[in-house]
Image 1: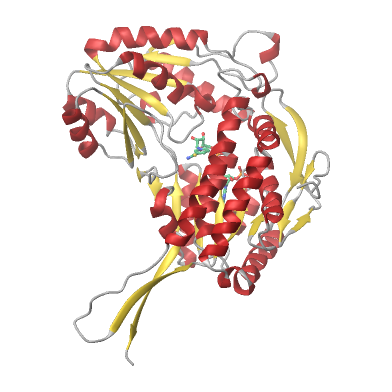
Image 2: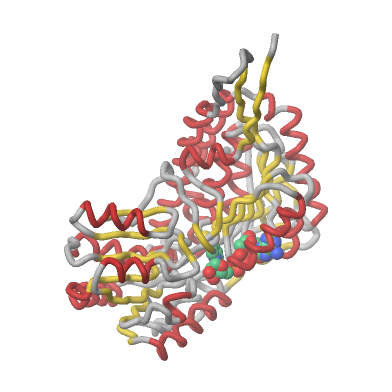
Length: 481
Ligand code: TAP
């Protein structure tokens, strides 16, 4: 990697293996200070056209012809190169997003794991020989789409880029990635590291820019064969419309309002810290954040008092100081969260937080105290809208039917945590919950388990073997000799 140098403070697009600086650039802000610390290329239609053309050329000339074993080796090497740059990437990610350093390190470890996992999986993409009614040789193969577009948000830039790129590359696609304007730097950096790892030029292209410019140009481009999007519901709808116009498949991951359901028989010592971190991690800016706590009334008071203690003790600061909670990403996000907290004050009982923390060190950055609302009615705005900040709502229930009705009673359906010692109740809940993933006595999921939403949380699948197959077409063949 020593031969790759990044110009101080100015980050390019990566197109066809070249660093491209655009006439205009975007200022990148440190969320802990509100100050500009870097700039990044501002790609528009021209650069997106170039990136899609570079990806198509790489696909036709080289990537399409590689064997699965060669792709596996490259992905594995890529994982190794990312790992060798773990400290640098974590520092960059923490600065760019404001997230605590230990979280940024976990994100880098996940990135490595995604590329490792899909390096193993690359050789597991195959079709079937199908018994047919006639005496003919009938079989399927799986083929890459070709050029895939990837539009990602700012909350886990490295993690989400890796989650979507690794299966796409392993399946044999060439990719064009549009990172969020607020946190684009790790995407640029890993595209450089992909070249160091030996990926041919054009296999992975990165076009930083605004959503309305680079994002719209990429999602509406007639030269892409598949689009993956992670972000908000309104933009997800635009992506789906653009994909429909071009008649290409889209995978949409649009966030949620995920519950943790704590039954009366739960182990509260186990549940409490996880319920807290499910909403405080990344300052609540996680698509699968455990934003709603549904708790059986018999253990309600005990659990809320334990959570209040954790929220009150949580440290807040710039990512580099490794606090429990960093700032949220931007002034706009701070305003969005604060407005919803204000709505919450009129809807429920504020138990803790709700303000910008006091102190000179918090005045410039986008800090919000960990916030806990109790007695939240299931239909309250704060129990229905995705807040995407460190705000937990608590609602109690009396029986399992009521818990399921509340859990399923939002527009979203991404993940659910269930806390119980009773396997029968756990299995019943797994069946009844309208969401893509259920976690029992944990709130973490690895890269191996398929992940995807129901309802307004989107469609399509990420992670696991299913995500790999989702980046392929199935082709049927019948042969008579
Ligand atoms: P979005 O606007 O949805 O941004 C996500 C990505 O889409 C970014 O790369 C964005 O680019 C791009 N984009 C924006 N407009 C586009 C368009 N017309 N065509 C193509 N791409 C476009 O999210 P946000 O405004 O940053 O956050 C708003 C809310 O979305 C949050 O409060 C939260 O509720 C939700 N959100 C969910 C997730 C997940 S993981 N599901 C992640 C982030 C936010 P630019 O950023 O460069 O404009």
